[in-house]
Length: 511
Image (cartoon, rainbow, N blue to C red; front, side, top):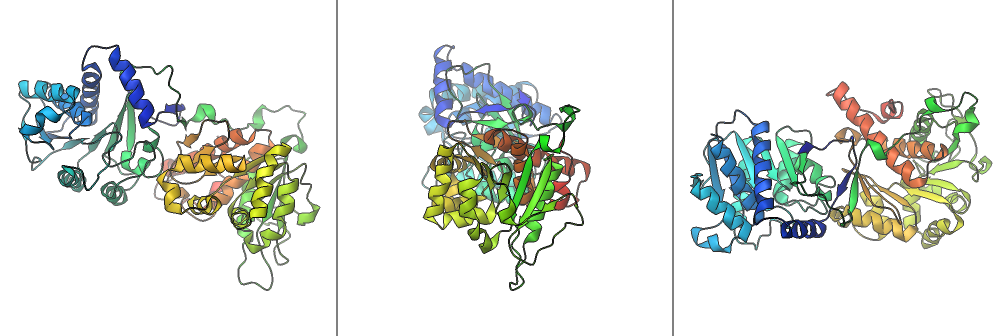
């Protein structure tokens, strides 16, 4: 058993794959072995997290997740802890339990584990063993009201909470959460202490994207001694080992600025006759590309009222859009481009060999079938393309709603990647990187400090620099999103309670 961190990438398995692995393992083991291992693991972690707890409440549901809870309660009771177990069923429902859970409950009863129909009035620690994988808080489900009440009781108590396998109400595949889970996450916050999940047998993607990170809190993992050999992961949790950042320090002494590639940022609409000026977005992307190690960074502002020099970053070189060498430079297009981006986007799609599309460039493409055709055709010409949409921009590109995108972020990102034959970076909690022919990854870094204007422009600039260094589009996207999030994590650790602005993020250390 170990705590999940951003150090190593981890395979993630869907509900269907997890059940297949479970069936295969159970067939080669004595009856009830997996559940007994799971319960012991839960009990050990509970004891480690709350060694001085005076009363531990274990809430058990109607399936095998409840069986894991019975087994955990058995061990905690035998170790001298005061345990109170509640179960959603009635005594007459005992025979309806799955065989493993039925045996676990019988073992707990035989050992004298206290059972009750109501939660204890006071408890120091609680264990959510209500639903597990593949189950949601369905209003039509028997016992749902009772489970809702118990979850709300856990959340209102403020006591540390350990979820068995998956927090009840969280979809293990998608990270979509029920209203109860969402209320709890909003109330306590993503950085709240005292929320833990022990994922058993496999790690599930829903723990790390959408509402998963808020709901699951600190994630631990125990493979129960089972090593999947023939089952392919549905995705990977991205760690340092698969998110290498190009390092200038390792370059040859004979290197020059041309050795590290050119990035051209096209965007930043600013016209004398308009009330909206968006040059800041383009400058943020350009500064970020420079600090990420690009040899030269050019800025092509759209309009006639923008600056001709960045006094805060004089290394940036300003050019007219038609003066750019689109064949040789990595182009980052769309940051603050407004309506003006429509005047250049067709040429850029047709000509730029390495391209990052963000913000207004994505909106322009979503509204124009001709541009969508040009985007999809780039792969046939051997061109590299990375799209960096947030959920609403992804929804516009896919012809769906943002809620539908968020309901299954992995599937939405993969559909866009297949449709447009490019790399897609679907931003948000647990940023998803998808590409044709590649296993999807979910980023393990980042926090709510990134929820501020301009951080997406910074990410686009970092991506451009990685492409300029020679990384392929998928590698560039993985390393950029990981490093972008890691910078926010470092800021939170080193400067707690201090706002992280996009300008500070653009200049943050990349190590």
